[in-house]
Structures are given as structure tokens and as C-alpha cells.
Image 1 (cartoon, rainbow, N blue to C red):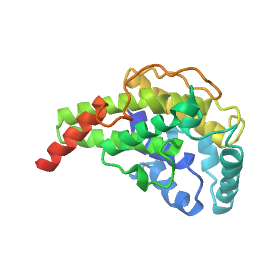
Image 2 (image 1 turned 180 degrees about the vertical axis):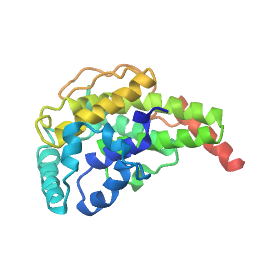
Image 3 (image 1 turned 90 degrees about the horizontal axis):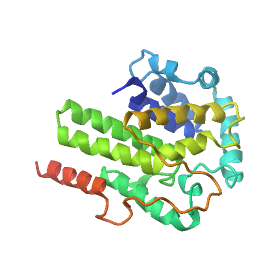
Image 4 (image 1 turned 90 degrees about the vertical axis):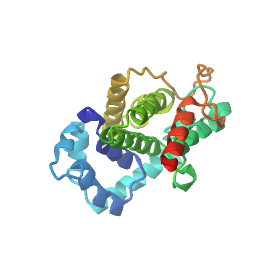
Length: 244
């Protein structure tokens, strides 16, 4: 697995995309930037403006960023959505289906979407889930579980194709955040990170754009229980593991 597909980078991107909590950020950022090994190498993968911004963090600055997050993504959420279902084609009709689709992915891999403090389509939540898939695939590789590795790799492909791939592009192209000294570089860097993942898995996600009302391209839908091949495979794998 390439350096840019290290789960620590996606966990870092997830943390930075969440609503800033100064105490949590000051505790977790040093660990994530060092990949929990203390070697600091993942700091080099950050975009220069983002790395520079993060190099001078303190509680006061993080509280200021917290206020800016509320202004940009809460008070101005109509112009700057940070939830996937606020983008894309025919979103007013497809929102419930897409949320159910995301919940299906999470549950298929043993995660309870009802237990998270954010909606399942928040950018930070999707990034954290992709990090989880990378960690799970690495564990299965270490266990020499070829079937399990194939299932997770397929799930990564479908998750990038149907959700995170196009979403990351949309976030990077958001006019409301491009000029921001923190969120502009963050979403550009995250977009590059996810694009590299798509390239590695030969995925070409359909672009999503705000205000678009076109119909979604047809594809398999995980919203209906039992209809998604990735979910079925993951559930079968989980049942086999429990019976072992």
C-alpha cells in the first residue's frame, strides 16, 4: 500500500474536516501527523500552506477556527455544504437513499452510524470510514486472508466511486472555502489524497456539483437491504468470522 494510502493521513484529514474541538485537536494532531511512530514523516505529505498553518497551533487559534467553522458550514451552510447529500444531482429526492446507502456501508463493516455525533454524509465521517477500510485491509493482508482483502478492496472502490471520490472533488472546488487560509489548502490537499486513491484503484467517480438537478447515473444501490454485492460479501465474511 502506497505512502499516500496510509490510514493516518485519512484520519488526519477527517479530524481537520470536523468541527474544531481545541482540546481534542491539540491531543490528537501530534499523534496523527507522526503516524503514531514519532518519525514525523507524514507531515511532509501535507500541502505547504496547510503544514504552515498547523505548525503554529494553540488553543486560542483553534477557538477562532471553531467560530469560523460555524460561520462557514453552519450559518452559511446553504452556500458551503460539508454534507455529501447537499451536493449532486436531484439531491432533494435522493438524500434519503444516499444516507441509507452510506449507513449500509458502515453497518456492513460492523460500524453503527447511529452512534456517531455527526450525520453519516459529513465529509469527516466519510474520510474516517475510508481510513477504517484501509486499516481493515492491512490487517487482513497481515493475516493472509486473500478473500477478506478482496472484499475490502472492492468496498473501497465502490465507496470512492459512489461517495467519497466525487465528494472530495466538490469540496476542493467549493468557491466559499477556496480563499480561506485553512480550509482552502485543507480541501485541496484532501482532494489530491482521494484522487490518488481513485487512481490506485482505477476509479473514475462522477463529478458532483452544487445546484445540479440532473439525474444520477444508474448503479447498484446499497440502500435496499440485501441488494448490494459489497454489503452482502462483507456480511457473509462477518458471519464466517463469528462462526470460526
